[in-house]
Structures are given as C-alpha cells and as structure tokens.
Image 1 (cartoon, one colour):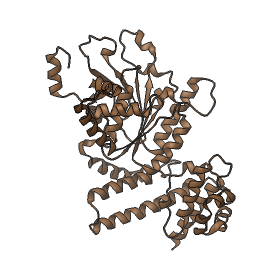
Image 2 (spheres, one colour; image 1 turned 120 degrees about the horizontal axis):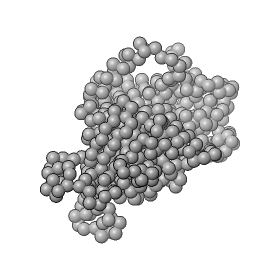
Image 3 (tube, helix red, strand yellow; image 1 turned 180 degrees about the vertical axis):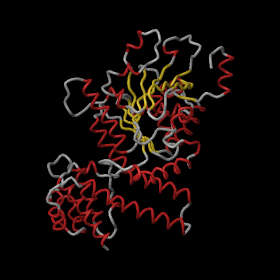
Image 4 (cartoon, one colour; image 1 turned 90 degrees about the horizontal axis):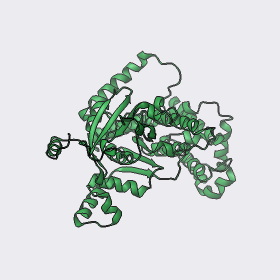
Length: 446
C-alpha cells in the first residue's frame, strides 16, 4: 500500500507541476493510460492534455472558466473543479522534480504492462512474437524517462549492458537499429541507432530526396515508424518518389499522367505496401526547429520506435533571432542532435553541399564542404556524402552508380559503399552479381 501512496504522490506532482508550468506538457512523455487505474488521475491528465492543445496560446490553458466552458461534464466525472483546485494547491511551486516524478509514473506503468504481457503469454492469449514486440516497445518507453543526470558507476551499468548484448544477438543479420536501404551499410553500421544524428550531404539534384524516401521505406519494414519533415518538397512529390522506388513506376509517367496498364498494376501494389507501413510526412513550408521539437515529442509518445528524417537542413529555420545564418545553423544542428539523444531516436538529416566542390578536380565531397552548416561537422555522429560521377560526366563508365561515402562514422568507421541509382524510378538498389554482369556487357564499370 505504501508503494501505491508513493505512486499517487508522484502522479499528483506530475499533474500539479503541469498546471503551474504549461511548458512541461511538451516535456511529458506520459499518456492517460500511464497513470494507475486505481485513481482518476489518467482522466485528469487527458483533460489537461486537450486543454493544452486547444488553448496553448493562452497564458493559462488550465484556467478554470475555460475548462468549465468546454469540459464541464467531463470535469465533473473526475471530481469537479474542487478536485482540480486541490491538485493545483498540493504543488505550491515547480521544484525541478518533474522528471523524477514522471519517471516514477512511467516506470510503474511499464511494470504493469510487462506483467500483463507475461500473463497473456502464460494463458496462451498472445503469440510469443507479439509479446516480444510489446516488451521491446515498453523498454523504449521506459528509456525515455531514464534520469541520466550526474556521474554513473560503471558497475551499475554492467547488468543493463549484458541484457543489451543478449537483445542485440536476437536480431537477424546483426542489424540492431533501423534498416538503411543499403545492405552493405547495414552490415557496416548495424543500422541507424537510437540517439544517433546522421547527416547525408550532396550537391543539388544528385539524389538526396530520393535517398531519403528509399531510407524511410526501408526503415519501416520492421513495423517501426518513419516521420519525414520536408521543407524542400511537397508531400505528393515525396509520395511519388516512394511509389516509383517501391513499385518500379517511372516518375515521368506519374508526372504526365500517361500511365500504362502495367504502370497502374505496379502503382497499386506499391500503394498497398506503403499503406501498410507507418510513414508520416510534415511538408510545412519553412519548418522551424522548435516546431519539429513539438511535433516529434507528440509523435514519439504515440510511436516510440521512430526514425526522424529531415529534408533538408538549409530549409530549417528557428523562432529565435540570430546575428547570422551560420549561428542559426549551429543552433539547429545542436538541437537536432538533442532530439536524437533526448528522445532516443535516430535522426537522419539531409544537407546541401556548397558549390566549392565543383571547382576541384576531385569532386567527391569532403567534411570541409559542410563547414558552413554551423557545427554539423562535429555534432553529427555519422556523415554520409552522396556522389555520382555521371552528375559531372554524362559519358562516365560509372553511369547509374552512386557512392555513399561514409566520411565520419562514430562507432561505425569510414568507407565507401556503391549502389545503383535508377533515376527514372528514383530507386536506390543494392548491386547484385546479375547487375554487375549486365553492366559489363554494356561496357560500364561495375
């Protein structure tokens, strides 16, 4: 019973702190179901969440007359306005303990759900595969409130590290993160890892947006979520790229509307495959890094296993004022890194490479070519450059090939991976022996 009193105190402190400081709702990873079913605190949280969403522009979205006007009957079901007032008074000030209380509530929720999952397995009411997927999802949810402030004793990490290695060993092919569209890159990196900030740079029209669409589709294969923020291109254009890559439908046919019967069949198959996956896109014009923070926080609560894709860095802005674009990009790249680390998701961001690379004899991009993008050179965990020889030389023997130059790879290493870029379909393909043979027959290098 004492444990439950402690939990009740934590739940009340979470609710009261949010009422005193509305911005804490942005930092809150809890859901109504996170609160114990023993009390009505989950319903109160639901009311506060809706109020914050509807009245976020108000100084106090939890002002009682506002709540009375819109949710009078609902508030009555949870004890009325006297109950709301009681919670507000029980937390006289925000004392910096919000994260602590949120962790208590979240940990208890995860333990309840794990116990329920174990009971479903024992009674044969769920498959082992479904239960395993739920357990992994709960581990991700729990990790989001793990307090990491202050020094840690390595001995305290050993037990967790052992379980992480065991978990990694259960992944087929050793890919422990989100899949890339490149098999060779998956082998090299073990996939895009939670907390990693990955930058993909290239000159305009080399294939950055197509690469992102291929990546977003590949990473959602295991049931995880891909969320694309596209300041460069509209949602329909991004969708067409993905349909072209997945269904082998020429982009030019979709753009002109001159679709053959075979095109429509492949289009339909691609639409079915894409429709089955959790892929979202926000094509707001000139997205700000603050808008991305707010949106991703909400998305992660619904889809904990998520990868964020940004198209592209130079289209992002900030709601803050800066003396120069360089300072703004420095701030933005730091914030993208913090999104990855704080929410424990991979963040893949495209970046345009400056034209100075075109003046060199060797036109392969290098780390120095992105120095104008703030601190992205140091903030990024992994930097990949896309390079096509036929971008500069139409008669190149490497026509149709694209290099993924891993110029920086924290915990990954560096190297170059070559894929086929089938431009009419916007498709990135792993090179097979059959492809190599066909290229040789055409006098092209493989």
